Structure formats: C-alpha cells, structure tokens
Image 1 (spheres, rainbow, N blue to C red):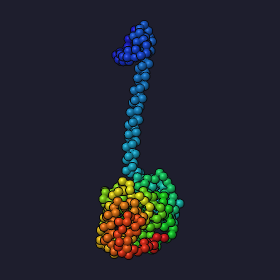
Image 2: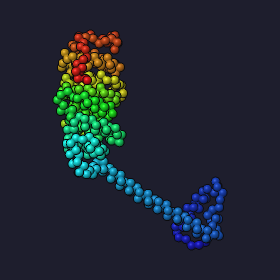
Image 3: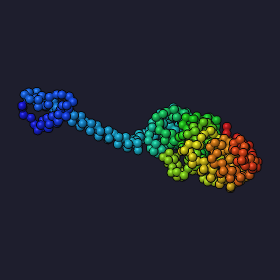
Image 4: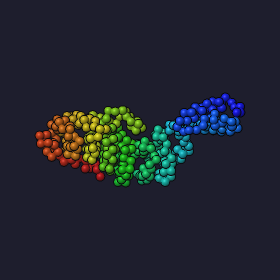
Length: 371
C-alpha cells in the first residue's frame, strides 16, 4: 500500500468507522478489504476524497464571505433607512417648481421623495412649503400619489401633515367643492394615514371653526374604513404612549387624547364619528366605551342643558345600542343629569331601563357643516 499523509489516516479511520456501522445493514467489504492489494486504487480514492474536502472548504469559505457581504449590505441598508443621500439640486429644483406650481413637473420629484425614509421625508417637507400649492395642483398631486402601493404608510402621514393639515388649518371661508371632493377621494384611498396625518392633529391641536368642521365632516362621511374609525377613537380616548405615527405628526403634545372638557366643535366631531357604522365590541377597542362615558358624564355635569350633548347621548342608545348595552346603568346615571332630553325610546333598551327626562331636540345641529 502506498504512502499517505496523516490526513489520509484520519479519513481512512472515519470511513472505516462509517462502513463498520453499516455492515450489518448493507453487506459490503470494509475499506481494508476493498483496498487490500490495490494501492493505486486507494491513492485515487483518497485523492478524490481530498478534492471533495477542498471543494467543501472552498464552498464554506465562499458562503462565509457571502454572509459577510450580506451582513454589510444589511447594515448599509439599515443605515440607509436612517438617511439616504439626496441630490441638493433636487430640493432646489423642487422649491422653484413649487413656486411655479405645475403639477406634471412637481410629480416626478415627489415620486422620488415619497420613497425616502419617513424621518428624512419629514425633515425635507418641513423646509418645503407644499401647503402653498393651489387646490387644483394639490388634487392632481394627491390623487396620483395615493395610487401607489410601494409608498410607506408613514410617508403618506407626513405628506398629509404638510400638504393638507397646514392648508386646512388656515382656511378662513367655506372650502371649495373641488377641495372637499379631493379630500373625500384621498380619505377613501388612504383612510388610516388620513386619520393620523390630518384628522387627529386637526381635532386635538387646533381650534376648529366652521371651515375646518366642514373638512372633517367630509372626511368622516366619505367612507372611512371601520378600522380607521376605531383607530381614531382609540387615539382620542386612550391614555397609552404615543405611537410612531403620532410622534411623526405631533407638533406640541405627547398624545392625541381629547381634553376632558369638550368644546362645542369637539362635540360636533364626536357626533359625526358616532353617526358612522362600526363595532366597538372588539377587544382592542373595549377601553373606548368606559373612557368615552366618563368624558361624557363630566361634560353633561358641566353643561346639563347642552342640546348637543343630549343629542350625542341619544345617538349612542339609538345607533350603538348593542355596543353600549353592557354600560346601561352608567348611561342611565348620565341621562338623569341632563335636562335636554325627554326620554329614551323603549325599543333600544329594556322597558325597566327607560329614563324619563325632558325635551329631545332634533339632531340637526351639524346640518350646516355637512355638504
């Protein structure tokens, strides 16, 4: 038998061990028998083994290199999520185009910007006054951008904040039909980003006058998804820490929760919300009912003659009787404090739960704000 290196001995031992374990299952000669008098065959056999082992080590080494490359690429990608390299000329060019206000020229630049990490996009939009765009250009831009599925949810939130919130905030007269129609279309297409980018900050951080109420009414009545309505109520009646989306949008407060004392505009908005169809029985929204009833109780104690609060209470027991059935006793206590209602209609609650009070007004106080 020919000479071979210690490595050969190790391989030979390993193969002999493997073959000896399988002898009883698969009758075959051992390595000693196989290569008993065939030194050349054995050398060839060992050479093949070594080549296979070298190839395995090469593949393993290559995989390790690829793994390191993938790790580097992943780290690079992660860093890119923090901030991407943006050509300063793009921003300067866009700023000039915004002044001219041509939608077709602006759109191509926005298609690039809207795919940036949201934190970086927030910084850029903060420096660009995109709310200066007229209603027609903004409508074209918005309706094009909401068509895409590869734009991040947070980026829509940022766009609605800087493109719509500031514009709506400064409306002093009745919004145009085109603007309201545009708002409605956007709300249908991207209702949850609309909640965080426009509705929540508008409701909780700014004074709402009639023009703002008209915009809010159009958004809510345009067909917000049930998920979006629940998200809106969750934020308005939640003590939880702000989410990432809240942090992006917040301008002055740590939370979007409503103040305990409601303004007249707040009551209008709540009536609009509870006038929609949705189910509060899901576990994720169970806290909304007790928190809302505590707020309602507090405000009715402050203003027992307020007709809007009476209408809101009536709306709960007519449109959402199933949701509030388990809170019947609380509602009875609250109802006894108001003098703006005559009675609870028996069909919505058991006969022994009827609370006789005074004077039910027709829920038309928002008629002027809904177009």
